Length: 384
Image (cartoon, rainbow, N blue to C red):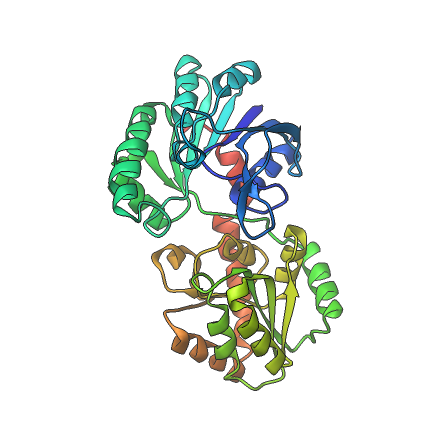
C-alpha cells in the first residue's frame, strides 16, 4: 500500500521514538511504500525545538521525507500557529496514497487532506490527536480564539471525511469532546505504543547491558529519562526521595539532558550518592536497551512516550497520578502525587525487592494488549 504520514501540524524528528516515528518505521518494515510530508520543525540540539531548511531526503525511519516550510502572508510566529504549507495537495495527487495518517489534529492542512479524501473516497484517512488540557488551549486567546474558533472550524469541516480521531490518552479524548465538539463515535483510544521486547532479544539485551554497568542480578535498577528542567520531570524530587533509602542493592540511573537551571543541584545530588549515575543523552536504541536492563521506570513529572516504551521493555513503573496513566497501571507499579509518595515507594521496594519481578511481568502483559506498534500500524490501514 502507498501510505502518506502528514506531520505538518506537529514536529517530525528523525531518529527518535515518538509515535509518528514508530508507525512510519513499522509501515516500512511491513513492506509498504511510505512517504512523510513534514514541517521544518524538529529538535536542533536534542533539547529545544527549532527549524531546518526545506528538503527531500531518505529519513532514518526508512521512508522518504519531504520537508515543507510554513507559508502565508504572516510573521513566522503566526505561521507556526496557522500551519499552512504550499503544495501538499499536489504531492498527494502525485503520490495517490491508499492511506493518509495525519499526525496532530490542529492545523490548516487538515482541510487539504480532507479535500483529497472527498475527491478520492477509497483513500483511508485517519488523524491522531495529542492535545489535552495540559498542553493546549491554556491561555484565554489560545482556548477561545486559536482552538475555539480557528482549529475547531477546521476540524468540524474536515470531520465527515475522517475515519476516526485516534486519541493518545483518556484526557485527550475528553479534550476533543469538550474543546472541539467531536462526537464520541468519531473518537478512538490509540495510546502511544512501543516495540515489544520479545525473547531472546530481551534476555540477551538485559544481561549485556546490566553487565556493562555492573548491575548484579539481585540489584534493583531505577531509570529516569528525559529533558529535565524545573517544571517538567521532577528529577530533583526523585533523587531526594531515593536518598531516603540506604540499601546498596538499589541503583538509580539518569539518562537525558539537564537544563542549566537545574544542573548544579542535580550534579550535587548525583555526587552525594554512589548508587546514582548520570549517563547523559541516549539515542533511541540505546535508551530502549537501557530500559530492558532496568527494573523500575520512574516518571513522576510530566507525561512522556518513554513510559509506554518502558512497559514494552518489561519495567515496573512509578508514575504521576493522572487520568492518562490509569490504563497502564494495574498491579505493575505505583502512582504518586507528591514527594512523600515517591519516598514511600522507594522505601517499600527497599523493604521488599521481590515484588518488582511480578510487576515487571504484568507490565509486559499490558504492553502486549495495548501498546504493540506492529498491531497499531496495521490498525490504521483498515477503514473504520
